[in-house]
Image (tube, rainbow, N blue to C red; front, side, top):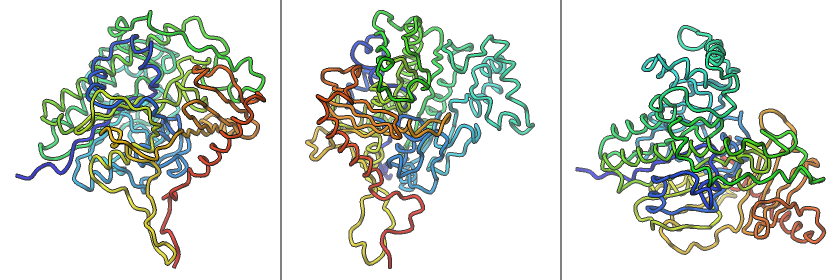
Length: 514
């Protein structure tokens, strides 16, 4: 009887969770027993950074291992070209059964709520994303019709064209959503915090877990699997089941960092019009954060169910499990909610825990990790080569590098890793509401400094992280730090230029000419 060709590889992915909210004082704000057990089984990376703190760009980088400029998904609204190689397609070609459950977001929400993700390398897809329509809402209508209107009241973005002629009968689902919101007194529900108006077992989060568990159980015993188990929560609006709210220990919830930029005459010009901006910390900040941490508790319970399913299927000992997020959530730090071009710690530093065979458990790593490192890490786990760039012509004599990142498996095994980066690079383009390049933030983050540049006169920020870990004193125009600023600008220029190396594979026929 043949052996399994490789290990199982499972992503447990959450949306909009900052590493900041899982460490320090915040670690006591909500119990996370399953994440704690995973940390004991694996390596926790404390300096992992998103390359672009928005959903679509970050997820395209995870799938391809490429930088934002290489894969071309600059911001939400762009879609990943299915012709670009993904690690999922490499696994699929090598014999893995691949599945995606929940939020994938390699396509724009406005394209429709029933996207086709099989062309990116998934055999099985059960998709539900931020709009809270599509397959999950269809399931609620069929299996829990008594909760259908309550679920509709939580739907987001009625501007999606598909909702006006929904399903085989061309139903105006948008009109039903509007009426459901009125019925449940939820006119602001897509944006405000709330407890779920239906049972936990009907929730989008529970639905995602159930689909992933079924995939694990239905995969033949000697077939390796890759499961992308990806949740919408704790992306805003924060909407946990009511019974989880009491789990949050309010006395451990820290107050937000005050919006110091409001008194900075050289503040980045986009800040005053940013997403969720407030120039003073609101009085209800504790309530806002309490709902977020309750969502984290709900997700921790799902992690336990996924691990249990792997154990029951006899797969756990041969499974690499990665707990990760696409970007962070400011959670009222500095007067902001959300993420994007505000490159404070809570926006750009993300959780990453890796457990699996051969990994030294209960350890931590402070190396600067970027999302570009995840795809080469998965490929090393599977013992597969990186996708090769097309080569040809008399001038091309050396096989070019195919991916900008590096595998993290050396750190996971406890090896000494030479030549690792000593800083992280993060970039943002404007969000959907504007095309203003003054919101195009470019950041270099080292152990001691964070420097961010906004072009077209948009402003600069420079923080000494050792003296000012909360990033409250902008030193960008302090003459005492002119030399530091100049050195970091040079470092940033180098990082910006190298975003196109190796060559972007989009529409690339070959390297070199005949």
